Image 1 (cartoon, rainbow, N blue to C red):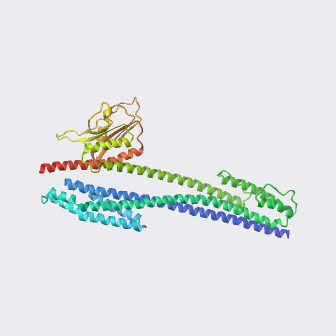
Image 2: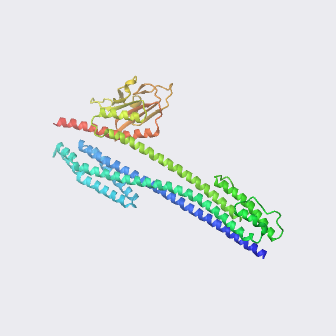
Image 3: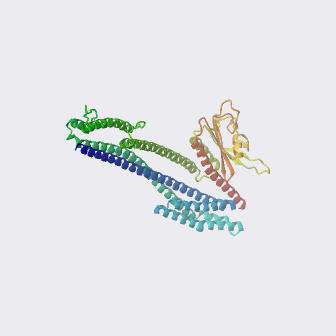
Length: 501
């Protein structure tokens, strides 16, 4: 009978271990599913960022088409139709990419279809008519008054305004989705952490409960073990059975003593793991020590998932930092662009721009040089100082610079940005527009439009120019180049009209 009871007890213990392993397996499966869900959320976040990027490309390509069309209408030069035609092709390609990316979003698909319909209608009903009218002027069948009437037609402005509004709506919709998905990703991470913690705690508690009930099954027949069983059931593992017998009951008593020792060891190790100490390796008594194996697996999985969550949080923080930086860049570029809206006088807008750029980049000095073309045959291109910031406080400054002369002239010659950082006091003298002096940090940026040099911006600071400031200057220079080019074209057009009249 005792042997049968011992065999029954072994079966019960095996069943208890299996239940513990099952619970831990369920915990592992749930953890894996949550991690997979987090990965899917991260992929959707990346997908939304791609859609937003394509939306901004559509905005840029629409602006290129509009700028090219106006340039052709004002000058009649076929060169201005190149960005218009290229913009149409690029707009169509970007549209197809965007349509494919948002194919699962009926609202965004409808917005894109409306945008393409408006773009097609604008080209067919407005752009082609204006181009045809401009061609008539070149053929002598119409006058500039006719083209002025077409340009002033509110129909074209309405089309473009509608397009811009729908593009902004499209981008805003995606940005709302992005915010929601970022929140979902954060909530999913929190859910995963809670699931790992409480799931592990639940599994440990279930193991203790199973052991408790197993011990209760045998304490009724073993009076010497009753008190010990109660202590174990209550969680007190400080006592053992003294002088166990040599019979089967003694074997059971010794087994209980071994179990108490093992539980003390595993409990201590489990406590250490729960406190974040993953350096502990739970020792296996044999190859069938399922509890030790399962606890080691749990420890390894918890450690891996903790590291994965930490990496995920770091990546999320980097993504947030990058997004904030991009928003700052967009805000600064938009701020400069707003300054040029409606501007007709280059000197006035130049002073406004250089003053604002100097403040944005924490520069103590700034200058803006514009290209000056001489009517004399073979005359060399020069750069004329047209605007400055804190210019009156500098010495040996140059108001006119030849191509290749100093930093400004070299920048104009190469059409490439030049950055001088941490110039020492005994460094060779740099002949720049700021004079014969070695500023701590100097950046010179060319302003071009379609590979044509328009102007050069020079800034000097006693602090380093960060990568974001350098990128901002490059982005702003492109917009300023287009604005200055349009203003110069308008000035030339006025001169031509005056000569014609």
